[in-house]
Length: 217
Length: 336
Image (cartoon, rainbow over all chains, first blue to last red; front, side, top):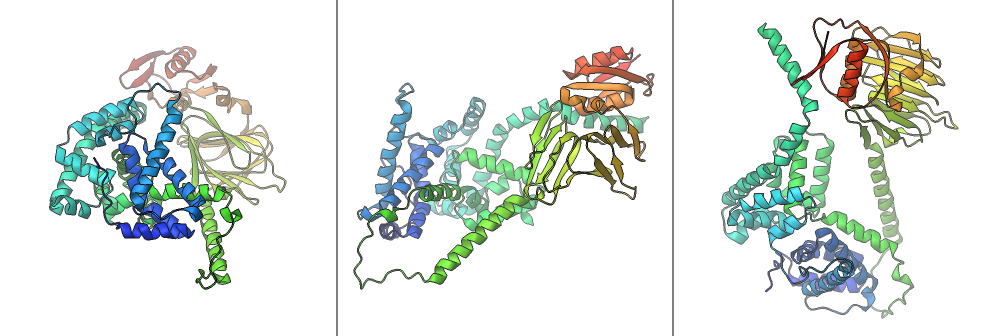
């Protein structure tokens, strides 16, 4: 099953031309190819349970390798799937290297992760993780879908309209109410922090109440 | 500007903001970086929006930052010019790079580098201590400043040069200033009544709301006042102070170690009035302490106390001044 989103505007023709540019050692082509495929490749890594930073390092490694042997690169029909395969192999090697010292827990490769899992795995603190889990559970499937499109896939409001066929106002309102729900649950932490910072605001409060008392007297 | 009234949600629904977070649109990145520089009133909402984007994108790193990392990696690599250059047929048009193209790119690179460096230099470095926290900071010239609790220093990287060194202080700090070969003056600016200029010495500066003072341990300092008062030059062991109740600068000779005892984690009071003591404790711990109406604020306290938790210190003060301490919901009260 290929659930990796197809790139929106990038025709395979552009990628093909860029690949040929890289083979001619044109640096501009290399950076443009990177710009075109970066977020696609990043999400691919995340989908397969790697954190975003590890994936980014692996992407940079493969682009470095491509540039180093640009002279000997072969022409490629489907640049995108070539690079995805390349990245997959690279990540697998990274995973083997790091898991040599950690117990194997079979959640590696090929088990494709949901958007929620990806977000929760990306957080270090258990407290934020559980709060995020609660927050996401409060969203309707539609809200979750749109939040993923916008913030995970990085789509503009207009692009979301086109893909879902929803009216721009509906997109906007759905996202807006979803964000409200998410932030309410996620910012409870800040509320607790504020309470524990009483030495900072209590004196101000007291001064104000003193002043009020004086006025009353 | 309309963005100055945006909430965190407004930012998150803005396509330009999203492009900035993803780092895939140079124009958007530049725009939002400049916008932040201008210190807008809703910067907190902006930060909250950035944090939310981070969470909802699974902490995806920005495209522009990642590309920069790749470019650095490529530059570290020995360039493959060593590899045999491919033989090109003569008639094939080779990419024309005239000398002026090279010159222009070099000039552009130098300019960009210089602009980046200049921008970095203009940035403020700020160090802040919380209540009951003391910390020593080393400055770019090797001088150090020990910050007492609830204090801060701030300086631009560009303000440490061959000809001048400038730093801003609020709260209280003990400075150990290195003397440079070129006798570069060192200036401590305050938002209080004065600035302090030195060449190389040790001294402490207090710039609290109720009291401002400079105490010189070694060397020589010049204290210049922001109003028309004549400047004062201090000799070791001398102090000059102003206070909220007495804005006229007073100069006298003291034991300087009494005034920087906090560096050694001590509170020293020598014939200090109870009012001064209460102020000092407020600055130290950030907790409200009140004198009961029947207690005279002019009563003096003398003693050396280790800085520990607020309650222990207050118990000791109460004992020294033969008062009793009660803890209420609103802090502490000293009463007869």
